[in-house]
Length: 521
Image (cartoon, rainbow, N blue to C red):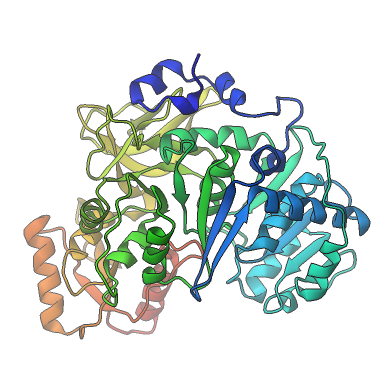
């Protein structure tokens, strides 16, 4: 029977998939498994594992042999410094040799790796360090001082001295962990709590992520894969790093301050055939007015996740790279559940669609009473999980052929004077205006209507009455007479969550503050 990696068609996936067959892709079993062994040690040492496009123009290339050597040395370093299995290791590093050495070395030694975003300030970092309480915190010279000293916590700056210490360690190490042992903590970028929740992953989680790899990003042996998202977040860590490496596929990433031109150069230089990025990455490439030459790169598999992509950017990506840009949808808690099966010639990705459920997964749209919605009717996306329906807190609908569509977060629906409006739909229309760089819509409290749509606009054009009238008319003309932003505020920069999504909570708080101060929006 062929391996799941040999099957590329949607029909084959539906007929041949089983969770048991996922385990055939790994050396380990349900009792003993180690993520670092599966992602690093078992692959040919001379094969390229990771390419890193640095913002300053440098390229860094690491083989599986490099990853094995440096991660073994770090695992031995942990033993030498008496860091015990089960303790947590905080990692505040950009993608680099040392980042992968620490990430995989920590898991080899039976410790719990905790990747941390390099743009965290002292308060954001403190919240997470207090929560995961690492025995060891590693960061570059520019970040190490941000960590608060604490008894039982060793703070290490990854300077030349640290590098020399690693070189003195043996490059031989045999990981011995159970599949049920804790491997990693991953912090979400949500803002509903003072401290975003840490999702705790055991070593066996690398098996589950293969569902997203095979059917969400369509990774197969021989691909030249790239994910420019930071490995401090779920997309860059699981989909962009662990999933391709577990399959022995060369992956590429981005380090440093994002620049659209640098990314497109890397796509060309690395001859990428499979790109998985955030919607923002595609949008910034489209809006890059400083590109020296037109983009001429054919990429057969394109995917995005994190937030919806506007229709103009989706059309641009399809025209520019020669393939439809496919959504893959899920949550940090349940993983990827709706995909477009990139690379499957028998599955047609529909513009704007989330696709269909991954194999062996049951997904439905439910109304507030718990009944399944007929095609075209909006409700909440629900997942059958552990013998009950699990709410995703996202709205959606299906079409007559069973494709799913996103209709925004449940709290992004705006009910105004009895009309139900979608913030996502209004944003998509506003982004079609050539002078709009970014747009976000929220519901603004209104005494007469309950709420009215308010748009925040980033543009190089002056935000005067003429511009406001143009934006309102385009929405009224292309959506409906009532579905348009009655209020528009022009801002210099859109607030973003660390993972790159628009921070709608910050926009609501900004708007609320303006109202409290008596300012007009």
